Amino acid sequence: MQKSLAEPGLLQAFRFYGWLRFFLLVIILSASLVYLPLEARATISYPSIAWSLVFCLLLLGMLYWRWLESKLRKWYIPLAVTVSTAGLLLEQHFIMRQGINWQNLPFMVILVILVAWQYDFRSVLFFILGAAAAEGLLNLFLPSTVVFIGSYHPDIPLMVSLFLVGRSTIYLLFGYVVSRLVKAQRQQRQALAEANQKLVRQAAAQEQLTISRERVRISRELHDTLAHTLSALAVQTDALLSMGDALPERVTMMLERMLATTRAGLDGTRRSLKDLRAAPLDEMGLVGAVHLLAEDLAARQNIALVIKAPDELDELPPEVEHGFYRIAQEALENAALHSGADRISVKLSARDRVICLEVADNGTGFSTETVPVQNGGRLGIQGMRERAELIDAILEISSQDGRGTLVKAIWTEAR
Image (tube, rainbow, N blue to C red; front, side, top):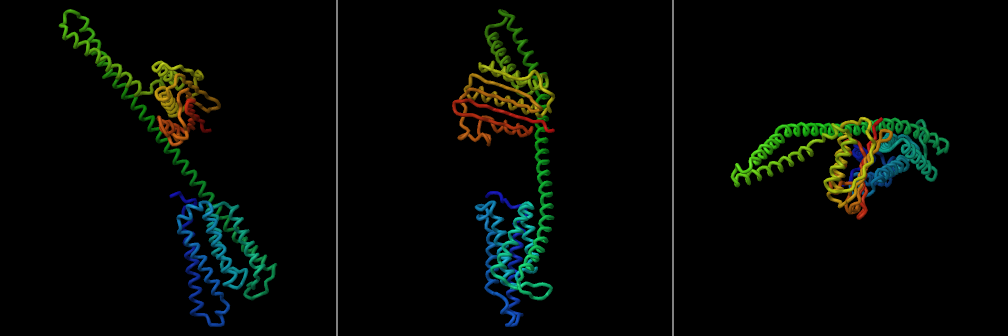
């Protein structure tokens, strides 16, 4: 089910308002039938009460009908407010038989509060003016009597206008105060959500840095133990083989296989250590690390490479450098291993504290219509997007079948 567009708690308050109006009308109807004398009952319009009950039931049905809310979306609350206001004005005019009066002031104030809760003060102003205009037209075409200081007077346009202005002023005061409070609450809620997102990103970035440092530590430990041990074993085995005819032929063959296996294990260990740590960042910075990364991959895959980058960049936060390095690594691996490209272009630029990385290839590409890159469709795109989000960077991926792929990451320093 789609998320409701109503403000939190608004529908619950609106339903309470609907039930309150419904039970009040039932009480009025019951009291008039039981306690009022026959001559007094003649002043009450029971059909109008029935219509008001119908409006209340219609409102309650709307407020509890989730399907209607999902279909109407942004028009759901305005329609409910319109039904509520219409029922209130008709009840006021036909049941009370006093035209412009103050009896329903609390209920109109509740509607003003609900409108201010959901929308801004401009919408509150439109609502109040619309209700006043509807009430004025109702009294113009269906005039009734007006209560003024306890006595009845003929319906005078000036008096009607004064009542409308007075009540509308009260509504405006309530609407202004509530809209200001709700606006402040929304700003605080948005600031809190942004702060939470920032904390989540910072925690994730810190976690990535911690993992990176631990990987570096493990790689150093393995280099000082396993790599050195395998290297020493290869040297010793090679020394034994240098003895030549002093060894039996079978032993020589076994030593040769042992030496080949040791050297293969040593090469694999060195590759694993290289993949395990992002040491180039510590030693050469982002520019040098990206250069080394791209050149190494181009040499291994026999791919033409074009690199455009400044000699150096201003000092960047470690998490930003790490994020760009991993994005470049993933983009280059995808271009070399999955796209069938024979030419890759890497561009790294910095201007006004805006860092931009572009990795383009002339490979097969893919259709963004069939592969939803916005949701991380394939080939590590989701991982690149996650790394971009961790450092508040923008990741753009454009590709077409047969026209290659462009990966673009942009980071702007917060001022």
